[in-house]
Amino acid sequence: MRGFFHRHGKFQPVPTDEDRLEQQIPEDLWVKCPRCQELLYSKELQNNDRVCPKCGYHFRLRARERIALLVGETFEEWDAHIYPEDPLGFVDGGGAYGAKLTQTEAKTGEVEALVTGRATLDGRPLALAVCDFEFLGASMGSVFGEKLVRAAERCAREGLPLLTISSSGGARMHEGLFSLMQMAKTVAAFARLGRARVPHLALLVDPCYGGVTASYATVADIILAEPGAQIGFAGPRIIEQITKQKLPDGFQTAEFLLEHGMIDAIVERSVMGSFIATLLDHYARSAGRMPRLDEPETETTIAHDASLLPIGVEVGT
Ligand SMILES: [Zn+2]
Image (cartoon, rainbow, N blue to C red):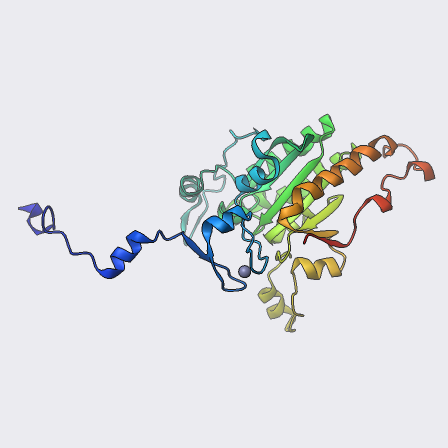
């Protein structure tokens, strides 16, 4: 009797026109560009590295998509076995942090918001630390920080240049003070990397906010950004509410920050690999001329040859 009221077997509802249409056109076949509103064929968008072919809008990428785009199959992951925990037993309106971690892991296929490892970029060895915004807004928790510090220390030991690709909402509030401490911990590790004379290249991608912008991501030797990326500490709405002032147009965009000297170059995704390769070549060439911090700098051992570095330029087509 229990199954009597359920529709089974031959009594299936007749599909409506809408249902038929849904079956014929998969949901993700077309994507609307948020900037120019153009309807884009997703395969075409994918083939164009997820950059709108009409207006150049850079869609967000997952961490592994970025890695594949830059270094292909050469990537060897580090510390993939470190899992975040819930040290505070944190519970908010959305539920327990522990449960949220399990759900996020199932949804994203990642165990943390940062992926680190070594690779080669057109034959040049480097290390990568890439944020995945899909994982709790790439918030910096204690495992995120630990993986990043391990990567920086490894790079310092091995003389391997480190490219960080950051996109984050900031600190992971579910881990409270443990999360905030990662700002100091990562910056200290990058200071040691600097003392070892190993370059840190930072690429800021949309959106990059909070404790990540305020720590390791902006203490790099070279800071790059993708066109149109939103970068800042607090969001514009919060700043407007606090200062009670209207913010200028384009505030917190990569272009605004380039104009105001916070970043060194805006680089389009299509030329990112070759741009980073050129930077690595410059650093490799000047490595022999770089003084250690405990040696006095002389005119002949200036670390950065300004003529070599493309400061304050927009690169791309
Ligand atoms: Zn567009």
